[in-house]
Image (cartoon, rainbow, N blue to C red):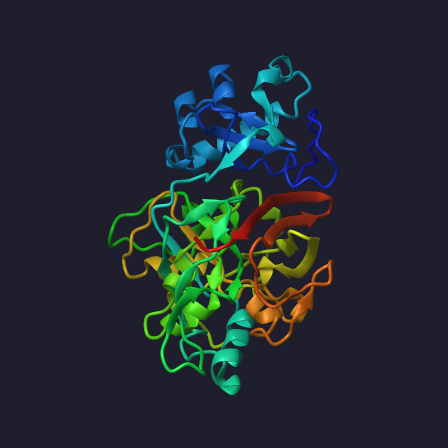
Length: 411
């Protein structure tokens, strides 16, 4: 990739380099939300740039409360907007230099959920995570269920409770039954967890009955976000047989505000793990379809500053996004622009790379210490979880910012 130098001030190691330019929805004060692109510590107001006649897309597409209508214009258009902005931020005689009103400081802006999510699917695609959970809850010798290496396991989740980073989450209530109890009780979850995930946003709709092949899947993926799929493990354990997650998951999922395009992530594609046994033909992929994205999880409390409790990587995923989308639609299920599909918990092979407290504390058996000396196995009230992610190669950095959430007491 050619070296690009921007005339905009971008701090060293910024997630939002000239090579990134992710899309998001922001507002200032009481103004209506609108579309922007992140560069360094600033936001380029796309509606203002369009009104200056510097983009081929009408400004009305950028004055929406979500990116759905813009994304639906198609990759040929959305990619051109990103590249046109990139050029305007690089060329010496850029007309944007005479229009400071185009730029907004991120610290002055309020970020919003970037898309209206019509449907949400959560996968279960990390073999390390699935193995760890299987060892804890089932036979350690047969941790993976028989179907796991044959299909990207997933379930249809609750789209209405996906919230943007920074939104506080109330501790969920539900039925809990431990092995010692004769009957379930109704209470607040006391085994509240995060799940370190990446999500991808659908960028091209399909019709009912239409299948997306692994070869064409990338055409239907607009970009990626960081995703925290909060989980109430005690509620989940009691309810998940026989139909899977429900109240233990549906109370909230947190999403980062900036969508990083597949095109920006192209330099970071890598080969995924070998898949054994061989997958069925509709899931066969050749070449690089995983992404080397470094991930970390921080935890803080009211009395203790943040500590890093996990460092993982999106490249560990056994099932990649192209396979997930191909499998999701192989039965003719249609997808719509703005739909979100999450990876499932991303864990690596060693304890430092586990993507949930369920694994980090090994079901609550291994407490760990915060900076103030207090101990944790799961999330307590007023604790904050911070997920971060970035890809870096040969001085090229493309990042996601962060997704944060603080757990408040039950209502």
